[in-house]
Image 1 (cartoon, protein in one colour):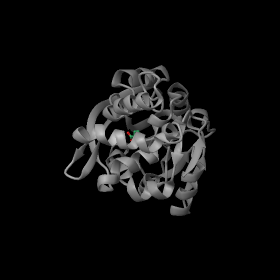
Image 2 (image 1 turned 30 degrees about the vertical axis):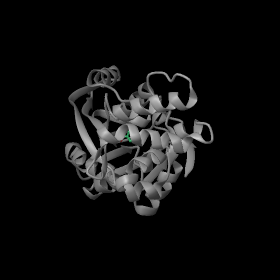
Image 3 (image 1 turned 45 degrees about the vertical axis):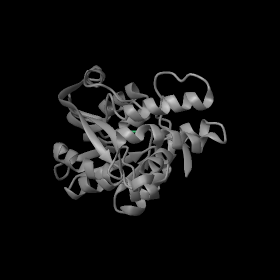
Image 4 (image 1 turned 90 degrees about the horizontal axis):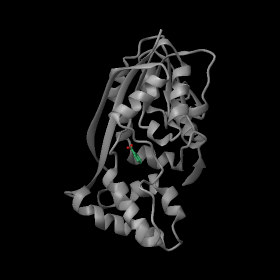
Length: 264
Ligand code: BEZ
């Protein structure tokens, strides 16, 4: 698994192969977000945090001209291999600039990794033409809260030192917080909803440990050498009564969906 430092404030370990094998629900859930985007033939659309490119391709299939960007070179390499006819670039969303504004900016399950949220919102507004739309889904306030609380408790046990009240890995805004941020950039929020999406993980008994290895690598790497395995075991033990149902780990995902339009 490679570790990458992402300029947008995203830091983490990504493994495109494992991501595609075990986390296809990420883009499957994103398919109805494309209905909300309603791409039109010939429109110029930016897919922010495109990962391995499946939704970029679904947008392109509607006849739009899409550019997929992601800060992970590994993900972009895989996206190009998957869809050689489409355009993908490695880019830091918080610093993204374009001389040719887009009709729409789209993003699925990526913005919560970009902790420089104000800079990202400014870049989104800057990338849109007047009247252009921003359609996105990200983890919202309360996302993976049981997991986060349990992880903090276990880290404190293993390191004998207090952890601040969050893991510092993600940005999970409330409706009010995100709408305010978008409005501060001249984007008028037309739709915003926060909803629970309990999400079954693949892998049966191993589902949670695979998820932790994929998405919490940065945390486990910082633990003392012998503590990584204990961290996983203790988390499984703590979360089993709440998140393990009939042989499947079910993550306490909560999503924030928004549509906003840039002022004319
Ligand atoms: C999410 O999609 O909500 C998510 C994925 C990995 C880590 C944290 C949150």
